[in-house]
Amino acid sequence: MEVRKDPIGKTLKEYGRGIVGGLLFSLPMLYTMELWWTGFIAGPPRLMVYLLVGLFLLAGYNHFVGLRRDHSIPESILESLEEMGLGFLITILVLWLIGQLKPGMSLDEVIGKIVVESLTVAIGISIGKAQLGSNGQDEESNYKLDDKINFWEQLAMTFCGAVIVAANVAPTEEIVVIALMSSNIKLLLIAFFSIGLGGAILYYSNFKGSHQSVAKPESKADVFSGIVIMYAVSLVTSAFMLWFFGRFEGLSLHGIAAEMVVLGFPSALGASAGRLLLQS
Amino acid sequence: MGTHYKRNWLEKIVLLLGIFLVCTTLGILGYDALTEEDSPTNIVLSYDIIERKDQHYAVHIIAKNNGSETAQDILIEVGLGKDRPLETARLQFPYLPGKSTVNGWAIFTRDPSNVPLTLKILGYSVP
Image (spheres, rainbow over the protein chains, first blue to last red):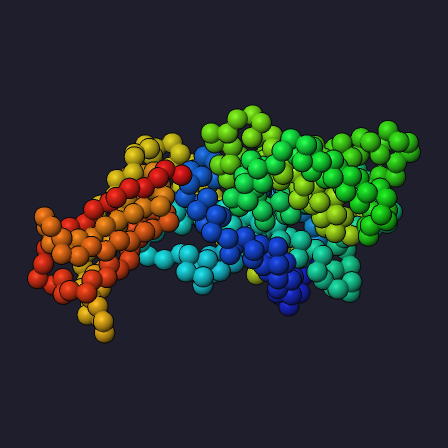
């Protein structure tokens, strides 16, 4: 087995790309008040679940797409911890620069803010490291055309894509406002529109990366099941994020479903187009 | 045949830092989750500095939440004088997390240095 150790210069470039990716995906969130507030409203158990789910997603991404994709599962976890460490540092720096970490804040408030924000920064770092490099620099990253399409790999990427897109709007009040103001017909149309758009991106519009990363459907049933899985992942992602941001509290079942459908739209966009961009 | 990566010193430092930060964070959150009792919001008001500006006087107001629950939209009234205040000023803070402090300035046209101040919380909501 060949043993390889990267020179420091290459690592620095890799981290540089990662940090740019992290900021690209998470700066809108770092600049959002609702996210700072979620840090101290969510409470320790919810923050722990969020951090662990985030690490799990990150490890999935690193295992299937990351820069060192032939790494074993423990290596993917270590790489995720490395990116999480960078994510924490970038989050602390940006939150401090924009005046959101200052004296007088309790340790719980500081930790809450950092946990909520650093997850998307870390996912962005991972994507940046793997996707933003030029071909000469990361020849072993990314998908190869002859790669076999694996169901679990697709599922992990679909979740990552949904999270990275939906996370930008999930904490905002607008999701609740749209959900509670929309009629049932409009909600149904939003759901159909999300399904149609996601399906078209995956199977019809010849989107970049769709050939190598979406299993070629052999029948209409394959297309149907692919679209159902995409939308199911979008709804599960939406439900998790809305639960984390405390958007289900005090709502009726109808309100919860309405919020899931409203957030399901950006999630479906992430689960289809976002996922293909992450894999291309 | 696969390639085995060995981390260089920079990657090792970042990895150790990552493990330390994630484990410490999970440790603190876990400890808090197991030991911290939810105590209702308990806001204590105080003031320290009085500054003379060009057209008014500013009093530095500090609000500390001794409880563990967060308060939202906190409205505070500061009166100049005890029973019948000569002047009142109002401050609003969007959030005050548990065990944390926020501060602001109450503005008066009269000099508050020799007058006792009354500090009062008018209300807050629970997020």
